[in-house]
Each structure stands twice: as structure tokens, then as C-alpha cells.
Image 1 (spheres, rainbow, N blue to C red):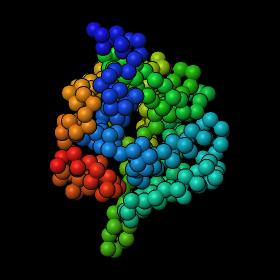
Image 2: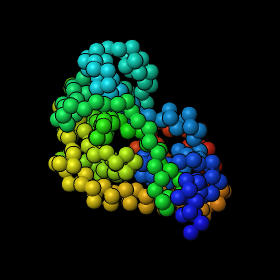
Image 3: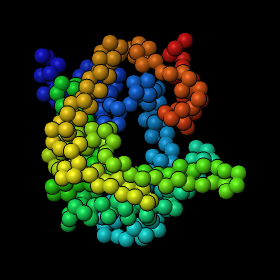
Length: 294
């Protein structure tokens, strides 16, 4: 009862405070707990922000291009040529040769991908779009608040941009080739959870825009049952369950980092293989994690 009252008064719970944590987010709540521990308790904020790859960085690039076009009335080609975008492109540091080739492909096809997003958004009718919007939301009994940044907001709509990028493949005969990717026939569930959080925070009608260089899909409450209000409410409850499961581990650890490490033991084979979550992670950062398991 005391914890619930504290949450209703918008007081961050002790289980977060003891580890110096202030808020949560959709992307954080959906992480495997071993990865969440590594990102939030081993890496510094600067180190965490520097871990990227062509897909993540390219997604941010497309987002900026679309937003600049919508909010400033600029042509996509002009946005791409702008100092803002060219600087962003020059700043990217590829992880390896394959990642470099993928980013080159994303940049080359950026105009097509952005135009496909804009074609989706045009189907929503005349809207006055705002810049990316920051929102916070408390959802009792979660003992902290959700922090979110919404891609696109108008007077009665909110939306998120999702990109599908092809993958480069090295062949002996043709060198590097690229696969074009189709958009999904229904939104990914993690994206539904994200848009459910945004909907709860704003009360606005949600949409999801998926785009690749060769395909596009727009999902709204009119054409996608996953975005019906009852399904959004269910998705949000499940997202809250993810966060409460993490809170249970914070409470068990009671501010002790070693205990939390043992409660969030990683898959060591994934670390050795440098699988998805561990791609681009420096060895000294991994060593800092592993010392907790001596």
C-alpha cells in the first residue's frame, strides 16, 4: 500500500534510487535483463550512447530526414544535401567492413526510404506536424516513470517511424550485393507496445509507418486490429509486467551491484560469439562485466 501511494504521488521507488536510477523506457523494459544490467550498470551513459550499428544509426538518419521535411516543408533531396545530414553521415564510425557497406547502402537509398514514409503519412490527410516530443508517464504500480520521445505528433495523431534495411552479402563473383526488404503485413508486437505507451501518455490516435527503399506499410486504428484500443491497453499492461519483473530483481539486490549481477547472469556463449547484443562492445567493457562473476 505504501509503495502504491508513493507511486501515485509520483515518488520514485527506493529499488530504483538505491541504484541511482531515475526512469525507465519502452526500449529499456524490453531488454533481456543481462543486457539491461550491462547497459545501465556497467557502461557509462556516454559508452552506452556510443554503441551503435548501421541499422540503428541509419534509422535515426531517416527519422531526421522525414521530420525536417514535414516540419520545415523541405524537399527530401534538399534535406539530404543539408549540412545537418551530411555531418551526421560523416560522423558515423562503422563497426567493420560489412557494417560500413550496409551504412553506405542506407545512405544511398535514404531518399527512397524517406519518400515511402512521407507517402504513408500523406494518407493521414492534412496535418500540422510538430518536432519530436518528449513525454513522461506514471503507470502504477510501476515505481518510476516512463520517459519517451515521440517521432511525430499532430493535433490528434501520433506516430512512429520504423525502417526496414537490406543486408549486404559478399560474393566472389559480384562483390558486395544487397537484399531489398519488404515491410511486414502486421506491426511487430514490440512496436505495438511502444505506440501503446505513447497513446496512454497523450490520448492521441496512433499510427505506425514502416518503410524500406522498395516498400511501405501504414498501420492505423482503421486498418489494423493490433492498434484497437483494447489491444493497446493489453500491450501496455504486458510492458508494465516486464518492468515490474525488473523491479523485483532490484528489490532483491537491495542496492548491491554484485547481487544484481548474479540475478542477471549473461549467456557467456553469446559474448564469445559477439552475437547481436555484443556486436561493437569493447573488450575492456566486457571485462568490467565479467569481474562480477569471479
